Image (tube, rainbow, N blue to C red; front, side, top):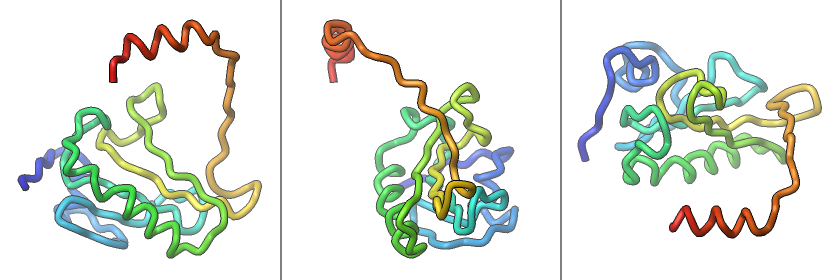
Length: 136
């Protein structure tokens, strides 16, 4: 399995060992390390060893281990509450243009991820129409 890394990408440079990190786990396709700007103690990142900016651009074989590794990190942290977060694109709050997953412990109301969820009421007919267009 061939990896694809980008010379200018900070996460690719971490994978190559050009930038130091506190590594938690490494496999042939995935690298996990502690975040240097954590939202709470134990905040970790799980990144594929393939440079793709957005999830839909990532080959499936480089995605296969990400959630099992995120699960291992969450279990090892021993916390009851945590978020697993993945953003795609600047408008969606992606800071580093390399697919990555955050595992963020939520030990209390003040530490960890804080978000708003401005939900709206969906029209059932429009939902059916959308599902038909998506054709999964």
